Every structure is written in structure tokens, then in C-alpha cells.
Length: 484
Image (cartoon, rainbow, N blue to C red; front, side):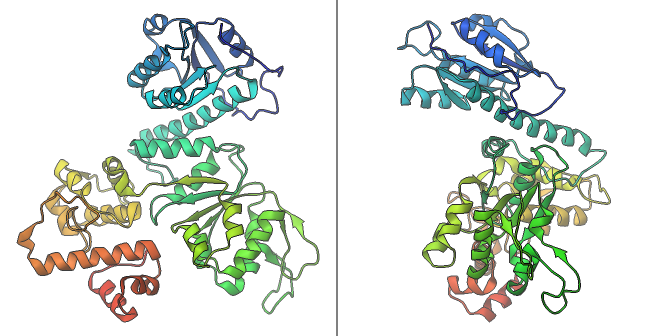
């Protein structure tokens, strides 16, 4: 008999944050103990329906498996702890219904078994006895992921006739699925939240998705590029000021933090914040209070803070560029975004999406050979660089079909297929017909792009690769490289 414990909580308790929706979602529960699905059914939110099965054969006999959003599967379906039949059930379900969110359940909390559950395709492992809060928490995170997927699908279906520029995550690779799961797992969680990733890899999109999944959808979302705020006006911009506080302050003005009250404040490029201003931001994060410049009284502001960086903040702490106490404050919840080169399977989808955004619409698409070339490019500037390339080639290509030769003509000098740089595929063949000078120039341009991607500022990038500031700017001009 499986262990079971259900806390006494009413259905849809106000203490449990569940999305309000008119859509009925279906969950499949496979357990040989009838008490388990019966108890789960009592706790199930009203917009979920449950189907219970006691054997795998009952599951495989169903013709409606694709209609389920989630499946909770017991690991030991015959009562023998030495046999984990549920692993094969999850493996088969994940193969048959790729979008199904599977959850493994067991009273045996052996680490090897739990890891096997995840390896077989489960997104989570629930230990028995299960309590209401944990069960509803898992449903909440699953529902958040489903809502993200449904939003993407609805936008994709309307894209052909009504392209939208609303931020959305494009891609179906395992890396992309992992990002969406990380975002969904943070639904209802207070901040701060730290987004880590290279420049141009989609941190602003991730921040917007974090914001969009919260209710109500009318909550403010304020984006602040900290690298673009001069150090001298940081306090006035972030916290606001009172009339007469300084020369030019001719009226009271709310700061950006106040503007985000009740919603999300997205602080991009936190690595660019000077140490003095880091202390001011830390004080707000610790107290939740802001004081306008020139004001006597502070006020409490309820806001969730999402910060983003394209550098390693821990390395900056070691070099004395970033406060360690601020790092601990902002890194409690971290979402790590992959570089485009780490999810190359998503490049065709991204490329076609960017073509669809072009205005006026040019009704063009990539040929297979062009897409194959795109997937071999290094894209050190990540998604931002891919977007610029798509814009350029859609303008220059003479035919509705964008061919490989059209794409090559639109490539900047520094953007080259894999195989030229040491970090690329070493087995790819070099195009020796280009000649040594051209290959050397392309590699040099690649190194400069890499340096600018990592260090952003040309002066610092020049120092890191051992050339003068003037040489850096000259080479950027020669190779047509823009600041990222």
C-alpha cells in the first residue's frame, strides 16, 4: 500500500496561487493504490479534470492521451520497491506525447531512482506522502509552462497575416524547452531574479515572459538599461526628485522604481553599474524603500526586480568591480540563457520568424541550403546578429527564395562558417580558395567580435586582446563591426 498524507485544505485555497482560466485541463494519474487518485481529486483545482488508471495497460488502451496536459506516474505499480515499472511508462509517454508534462511519484526516495525518473522524461519527482501544497505547487508550475506554450502557438498561427512584435521565445530545441521550464518555475515567485547570458541571447524576452505570466496582465513592466544612465543622474532617474532639489528640478518627479510599483522592474546590464550606485541599489533591494532626491521621507514600493547581465558577476566580484553583497541579493533565483551557438536547431525557426517581421512584407523564405549555412555561422552576437543578417538579406536577395549565394553576399566580413575559429567545429573544411589574406582577415574580425561580445566596451576589449584603442576602432571600421 502506497503511503499517503493529505493536509486539510479546501479546494482552490487562497493560500495557493493558481491561474484563473476558463480552460479545463486534464491530468492523468497512474497509481495502483486507488486512494492516491481519490485524494488528489479532492485537492484538484476546479479547472482541472482527472482520469485515473491503475495499470499501464489501461493507459495504453486510451485513444485520448494527446489531450492530457500532465501525467502523475507512480514508480512502483506492483507494490515491489525493487521494480520501478513507472520508468518505462514515463519513457513511453514522453515519446508518444512530447508536450506532456510527466511527474514521477514514489515513497522510495532513493537518489538513483529519482535521477532515473528525470532521465526517463519526468520534469519533476514527488516524494510520497504528498501534501496538498506540494501537489498544487507542481500543477501551478505546469500550468505556467502550458500558458507560455499556448501563447507562442497563438502568436505563431497569427504571424502569417498579422505579425506581432510582442516579445516571444522562438525555438523548440532542448535548450529552449529548458529556458521555458525555468521561466514557468518562477511564476508567482518574488524577486529579485537574475538573468545570465551573452549579449543578444534573449534576456529581455525572458524578462518579459516572466512578467507576462503573472496576473493581472496590466501590471507595469519598466525596462531600464543601467549602462545608458549617466552616473551623476542615476539617483534622480531611479528614485525621483523633489522640486528644487537641484538646478533644473522645476517639478516633482517620480523615479523609475515608483513607476514600476505593483509590477516588474527590469534592470538590464547591471554589470555596467558603478560601485557607488550599486550601494544605492542594494539599499533599496534590502529595504524596499525609496527616497526622492530632496525628500525628507522615504516610501515603501512593492515591486519585483529582474536584473540581467552578460558578464560573470562572480568574476567581477573577484576583480573588485561588483559588490559581493549585491551579488548575493540579486542571485537568489537565476535563469541561465544559452548562446545561439548552443541551440543551433532553433536557427531556422528564428530566421523565418525574423523574415515575417519585415515591413513592408517581402514574402521571402530561406532555401534549405541557406538555412544549412545559417546553422554553421558562429553568431557571436547571438540572436541580435541573426536578426540583422535576416533584415539585410531580405532586402538584397533578388528572388522570393533566399539562396545560399544570396546569404553569402550579405554576410559581414567577420561572420564566417564554422571551422575557421578554434572554438568552432575543427573538422569543417576551410574554403582555401578564399586565400590566406581573406581567411586571416575573417579570423581577425571574428576575434574582435568575440572580444566585443564578452567585454562590450571597445576600450576594454582592445586591452584584453592586446591591441591599442586606435587599432581597435580602425579594425571595427574596416570590418564593418558595430558596437554590441
